[in-house]
Length: 446
Image (cartoon, rainbow, N blue to C red; front, side, top):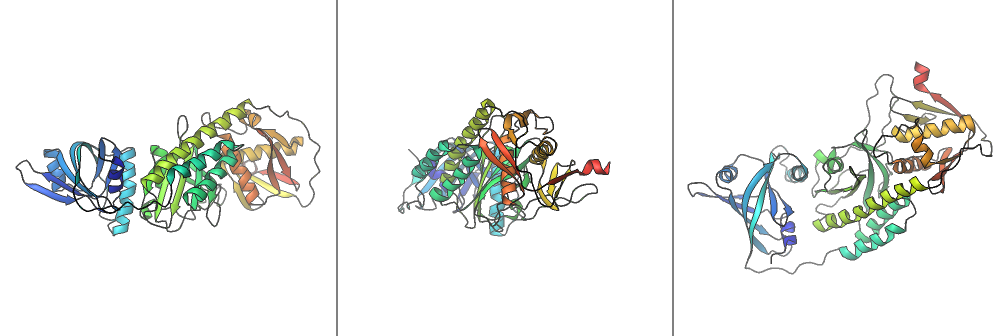
């Protein structure tokens, strides 16, 4: 029996495969494979970039032979294929498009290598070609024990914020992945926002990207892992993405994305939700060919557990006891009043002249501050926020817990005079150390 895992390694592109086809008149043609992708035990895909002799032959005669060499053992394989169809959109196409961009950039062919389609082939037979081989090297990571170690710790976490920290800690400790971050999906705005990161000079918490942008955005849109083994500017993220300052809109409300300036390898894995992904786990490395199929498999399994636990935390919070609205006896803030501005155009909040947060998280903070200013409140619960119309949570996939994690971390990172402290399941306390002057900028301009 042929190990199909070996075919996956052969298709990673370290050693190009050779495709043999035949014209209707019997004339053979041999060409190098630009890119291949393992689909399942019965199918693989080859990239279609040019209407060349190989393409002409396949359309006329759907049978092909693919010669592959394992990049580590030098074992050779002969794979007999039958062409079935070409896909020009969808998960397989997008994954191959991203990988091809990396290959093209690596080989100086960015202006030439453009994916036109993914040709799907049925695997009819796989033969081992006799010859001298090398022993398989010992992998740097023993994946099953590493996966087990990470998965054992995750269920012991008490809340969503601890869950994300434990995930990133486990990746560094057991998988040797030093650069990683988690982005959560805001389906109403079709954007992802960073809630946790490791290994970067700045955390980037609150930075955003559009769904469909780069490997992270494509992974979220297509709901499949996207892995790139070579640096490509087409799928890189700018370190200072900012909005244009249109009249009436607040100034710079974009937080720099914390990604590596020159990544050699990237892997984005969607965190599964019910209707759409909860978010994306993103790992990268300055080293090319850093992430293998084994890394991808392990991270897919890991985030499946993360997604299930995250949804469990949300369900438990719905059942948690709700704090009753009341006026608490808290020390009266002292010092110079701080001007807090809110722009309703994008729900952004500024502490003094410094941008803090926007979107739903900004709306949450503004609601808390309004109740604190008007009623003296400091104790709040997730359940009451979810029911508060001022917060304007989306109808589906509101993911309130992730937005509170984002807000808590942004306030802590900025060492702001306003902080959030967890006081129990689904409860938290608003800590205000200075008098506040709230100013709704859109009302002021009306």
